[in-house]
Length: 114
Image 1 (cartoon, one colour):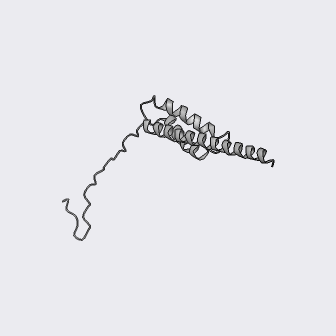
Image 2 (image 1 turned 90 degrees about the vertical axis):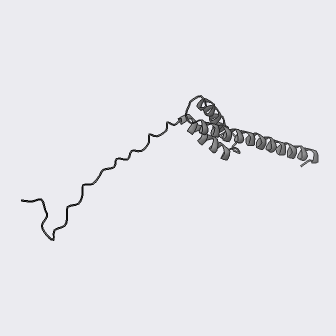
């Protein structure tokens, strides 16, 4: 008996090689930095809300400052601080202007007797 295949039969395929590809380990993240970034972005859209608008700004600032103490997620923490800082500046300017407009309107209506 020989190991030769019979004429007309398909040759046996060569053995396949198995390749084991592993994903690199995920970098650790900082949940406080992520929360700071999300709240900083949300605060940019809620600057005009009278009372609710202050909550995401202040929480994003606090979480961003705490997240800077951790070794991971510094970029997101800085991004959250920047977004919250910009939102805070816009919020203060917006409300000062709005109060100035209402004050001017009240003064004008009082002077002119409306």
